[in-house]
Image (cartoon, rainbow, N blue to C red):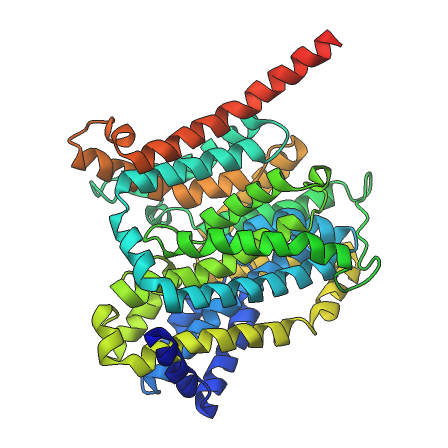
Amino acid sequence: MDALASLAHGFAVALEPTKLMFAAIGVLLGTAVGVLPGIGPALTVALLLPVTFKLDPTGSLIMFAGIYYGGMYGGSTTAILINAPGESASVATAIEGNKMAKAGRGGPALATAAIGSFVAGTIATAGLAFLAPWLVQIAVNFGPWDYFGLMVLAFVTVSATFGDSPLRGLTSLTMGLALGLIGIDKLTGQSRLTFGVPELLDGVEVTTLAVGLFAVGEALFVASRFKHDPEEVVPIRGSLWMTKEDWKRSWGPWLRGTLYGFPIGALPAGGAEIPTFLSYVTERKLSKHPEEFGQGAIEGVAGPEAANNASAAGTLVPLLTLGLPTSATAAIMLAGFQQYGLNPGPLLFAENPGLVWGLVASLFIANAMLLVLNLPLIGLWVRLLAIPQPWLYAGILVFAAMGTVAAKPSVVEIGMLFVFGFIGLLMRRWDYPIAPMVVGLILGPMAEAQLRRSLQLSLGDPMVFLENPGSATLLGIAALCLIAPFVMRNLNRFKASED
């Protein structure tokens, strides 16, 4: 009951006209920035920090939260329409969403993404309000070995599921893990695999790799086949809105995506990438239409997009209750708290309840604003696909380059963007899955850090991963997921030879 009373007080704060204006500005900015490849909500919040220095603290933080939610959704628009994820968390959405768009079903794909984001965001924000203390207690008890097991499970499920060959998936993952080694070793301070290039000391940017492999690689692939084997893109086929069958196939993935996104997002090393890919893998396994995956299955958009937005609310759990930022945007929001002399943590709820609960209540309002803003724009966004292909993909290349330069102005970064684009072209030509490579770069450094922490705490004893029940269970599931595709393939061959 205390939570309900506190939330009611939060709504009284969030529904003030000035606070509603801050939320609307945040949602608009977040959505606009989210659709630009390479420019994420973290960069936008960072740019606005100095501007908001003398503004109302509660209003500024509400605006930052609106930018976060809007950016997480906005990345799905370009991911679906032009295969250019605005955020690394939108990579899973691009896999099926872009296939749907090319088949003339961009409207239903955008609609299930918008509604799924609203459903997941609302449920997850309610979870933030009522379950935060309980989830934080679980998160605090997670050891580095448990995080390592969770990441290994993500590696294996993604590699074994994407593409026709688990071996090709593992090859793609290994390339991503190798890229994750580039930069300064945080333990020893030594540079690794930088080859004397100063720009590589900070490592490879995830957005550069994702935009290069997906957007630039797609543009080069389409250009290479334009005259000999042109790919027909149908702007609209059938209804712009979701059919009864689409609704039936989407509600389950929305709920399952929420169940993945919120708890994993609340973990100090969770993030949005693990739940989105785990959601995709789950929907592929549970679908009654597995043949549609890889061709444009709506479940493959609904689940990951719900997980994406649920994880955004989950990320705020450790930030508000422990003062622990678990994403780049959360880290910059922490700086926003500190510039007003506020320190997130258990005392913040007691010392400044109006700000905390006003922020939580504003998330419900921002979610509703996102739905109202984006559903009417679906028809406009889908019309982008009617642009002639040479113009469309030339524009993609320009925006990809602009987004990369805005995030990190460097000739080396632009060079890497187009090198990754060429690699993306080759991987498409030889049927290698792209997503595992991005996953390897995102989670590789995190997995390495948790592995080394585990071995330090156990004095170099690798049995620590099997002695702890959480990590042992996760690694056991990962081993089963790795072996299962090869066993099933051999069984199918054996049955075929018997017939």
